[in-house]
Amino acid sequence: MRQIDKKEIVSAVAQLVQEANYFLGDDMLKALHDGKREEESVIGQDIFAQLLENAGIAAGERVPVCQDTGVAVIFLEIGNEVYINGNIYNAVNEGVSKGYQDGYLRKSMVKSPIDRINTGDNTPAVIHTRIVPGDKLKIIAAPKGGGSENMSRLQMLKPADGIEGVKEVVINAVREAGANPCPPIIVGVGIGGNFEKAALMAKEALLRPVDDSSENPVIARLEQELLKDINKLGIGPQGLGGKKTALAVKIKEYPCHIASLPVAVNINCHAARHKEIVL
Image (cartoon, rainbow, N blue to C red):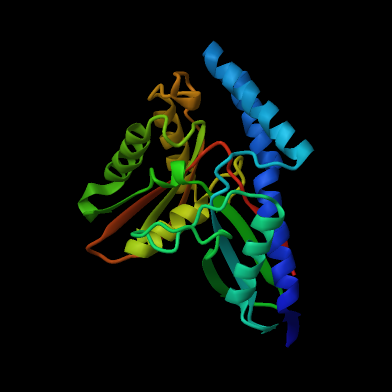
């Protein structure tokens, strides 16, 4: 059994939440460059150029890509041969607190959704844990801003609604979101499972590289069809019109009950932030 000390996790999380807010991934930068080249709207092209300039300044000066440095969403993949010397949830929250304070990142968490008093250090994080084989600990930090998160949707369809019903849910979610999630967007979709599983899959789907496709050819085709239909909406970069409303659609699926067809949509803005480390 391999041992990982709590201090390693605190340090790793503190580093990840800062880097995730400062640096866009190479796949995202490439998608923005491609978007600028393919966008037909002059205003849209200018917006893409500004987004790329903004990303360059953020990386060069180690400042956030967006003022909304988000809820600290942390995914943990814990090997079943790993022993954590300390409480892993406390370690993650200590890391988030340290990272947001050291990096001067905006603290967005409130103690209660009713009294709205800021916790002052962006904790608690939203932590998702999965046990996997092996002796490693994988940590993924995915800060999620409120503008795009508020555009999330979940609908429990009837099985008879089928693939056309799924498409309608996704397209309507993007249409109703309009400019609010700061397009060009990445659209995460969870299909199947149950109420909570579909929502989690929609968020996990956003962690995939922008330029990949589902390993399931049926799902890969659905991703492309949805992307094409979304970009016909004409919302465009920052909602000012154009053909590039979305850069990608990512779908995860899971078996479900014979009477259910859950569909969840989680939208990410152009600052599709996530960084990971394996301890």
